[in-house]
Structures are given as structure tokens and as C-alpha cells.
Image (cartoon, rainbow, N blue to C red; front, side, top):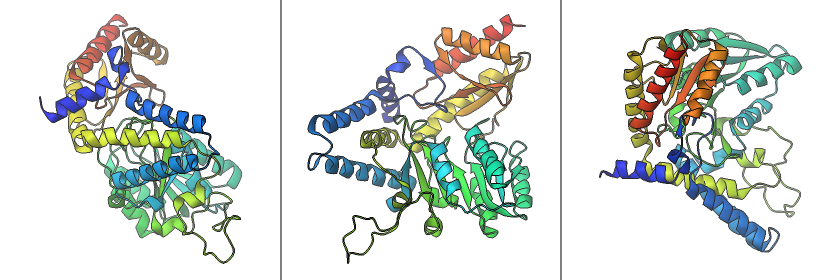
Length: 393
């Protein structure tokens, strides 16, 4: 037995869900391993049993949380001072938007592949700050995306919003090239990595973006309620999403103020340290498997899925099938089925112990293929879709 096979088997053993479901919804909510849940429960029990206000208790948890922040920073290739905790990607995105001084007529450039929470936030800027939304195309390929972005940058753009992996069809978007275009114009780029981190290796400095946002509860398999935001050193001095002074009221007279960090500018109030420490355990799992190994294995499963689906009539693969463009997210259109029929098909799949997502934008099915899935589950999914689709013709 190879180390990779053994590690993947151990991951499934750490996920009791795999014993009763073929779970293809990691792009929305990744299942949390039992070992991660134990860490969260143990830390919360420690806090409760010994009292959060007791001398040293919070200090112990804070030290552990600091270690996890450093661990996450190393995982992403950045400095921990540049990372701030959030509850999720949407909250991280809001932090970025609120740190900019929007004026009427300013423009925000948004790709057509962005998550609904990003679209809604931009609509709110349009309504309340009179910001103009400019959408550039993401579906027609990299050249069209970059050309549309370059055209948009000739206006009054204050920020570019782009996903590293499209939430709609799983296509890997040209993030670094887009960042280069934006940087040449002096416009910051916020990169949404919610569908990337944990799927394959991510080195934030190599992406050349200004802000990077993501969640821990998807491909990282962390607990719900933990996300993060990275702010580039070039943008940190202007990053002020909240009313937080650089020098706290508790700072003793004569002492110099602490250095400015992403966390000092955006983390408010009391936090649940247990969730963040739990994410540290999830990171250990991902690191033990190896992001490169996860990427290779998932691509094997995805290519198997593509191969099996190509022989099934009535099913259109929306996601690019070319290696290097595809990720673990796969969108499928069932040509003869409308919304109501698709939703019913998903219900029928669930009755068979198979979990997929309805994608309302197309409409389509979205299948998330993760490291804990197996070849047998892929074949089972394809056969079930084929049978159910035939029964509705």
C-alpha cells in the first residue's frame, strides 16, 4: 500500500459521513473530520471548565491560535502579520470593500463568474454609494476575460473582484495575468480563493494580488465559522475597514504602539479560539496528504467523470475538460430537464445516498470531487444520473 493510498483511506475513516453518503458538495460545505471536531470540543471544554477569565486560560488558547495563524501563513506562503481571521469568505470580502473610500462614479470591476455574495455586495455599493458596476466576461475563455478586464481598467476602477476558481463551473481563471493588468493601472485586485485553497497548492505571493479571501469550511475541511483575509504589505497602511485605533486605550503611556497588522485593523471583540485551533488540525490533515497529491488524485477522479459522462446522451459537461483548466468542481447541464425536473433529480439522488448541488445560474448540477471521494462513488454517481435522466425522457 502506497503512502498516498493509506493517507486517503485514513481521511475517509476520519469522515464517518463517507460510510453512508457519496458526498459531492465540498464546494459548498466540506465535511469536518472527527479529529477536527474533537480538537474544537476539547478546546471549548477547557475554556468552560477552567473559566475564560481565569488567569492563563485565555492566554493558553491565544498561544495556540497564534500557532495556527503562523501555520496558515506558512501554508499560503505569506507572513502571519498579513493575515486576519474572519467568519467566512463573504465577511472577508466585506472587510476589503469597506476599507476603500468609495465616491459616486467610482467603478468596481467584477467578473461574471463571481459568487452571489460578491454580486450582492457590489449591488449594495451601487445603491448606497453610487458606485458603478462593470462586469467583464469569464465564460468565453481566458483571452476574452483578460481583454474585457483591460477595457474596464481604462475607466474609474477602484477595485477588481475575481475568483481563482469559478464557483459556477470550476474553471481555473487567469488570476496572475489579471493581477498584472490591474497592477499596471494601479488598481487593487481582490482574489476569491474559496474554491481553490485546499484543492491544490496556493502560494499567494505568486498570484500578485492585493487581497486574498477564503474560507476554512470548504476544501480545507475545517469547522464552520472560520475564514481569513490576506492584505498585501502595499495595501496594509490604507486598510481600515473598522473604527479601530492603532494604539489601544490600554496602552501604557510612553510605550510605542504595536506594529500595524491585518488582524489589528480588522479583528474585533471576543473570538471563538476553538474554531481557529480546529482549523489548525484540518490544515495538518491537508498537509499530511499533500496539496500536490490531492490535486493529482482529484484530477484522476475528474477525468474519470468526464470520460464516463461523454458516453451518456443528454448530458453536457459545462466545465472545461482540459487538464490545467478543470478543478474538482464540475458543472453538468441535463439538456432535456428544466429547473423543477433537475431539483427532483437531486432529491432522487439524495434518496440513493448521493449528494450534489443544484446550480441555479444555468440551471445545472454541480458536482464537487474531493480527496475523500473514490472511483466507485464517481461510477455510482454517473450511473444514477444516467438512469434517472432516461426515466424522465
